[in-house]
Image (cartoon, rainbow, N blue to C red; front, side, top):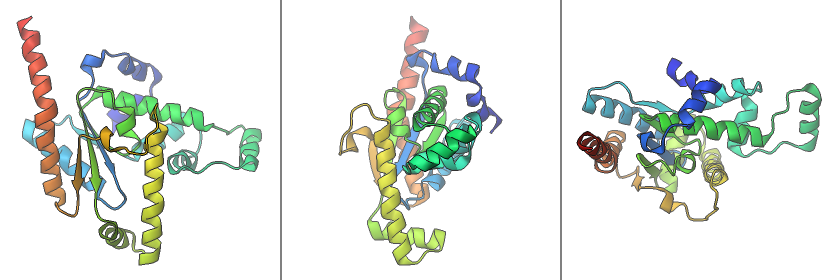
Length: 240
């Protein structure tokens, strides 16, 4: 966790952002429909990767970003969470915050999120859950972008169990959260598209695979796409 907060030191972050693109990553982003257990999958992927390669470098990041960005911008956590949730401030709220000296615009929050997420991804060895990561890290070569999906009512039942909701509340929560996550991915794209499928290397149906099986699939895809790229670059570098 101490390493994570290095990204909120301006000088350190700038040094990471100025790195050569050839040195970026590796990074795995996991986007998900609501109720697909993405955090549990990410934690398992990290454990599997560290065990497979005999290292401890891999870690996963999710909501920690919200708290640290709020601290950096000297605003409350709810303000950053509202950006993620797509909640716009009313004119009255903006005026009150402006007079109190605590107003932080969506543009500042968006830039802080982008800079922090991109620096984390460029540094590498991270599994990033949500946070618009697939859009922000789309130009990183050594990146694997995964989408977790599942049938609507499979996800509703999962949310009901986890959040102790009745079916009506769970249905509403799933629909609402899915829309907000879709919009968040869009907000960090230069060119908008109604179809986000092309952003992802693979889509996995969580109904068909357990958390452990999903992790194994992701690690296998990582080996096929990224680890071989890294190994080949190292080989060529040693030759030349």
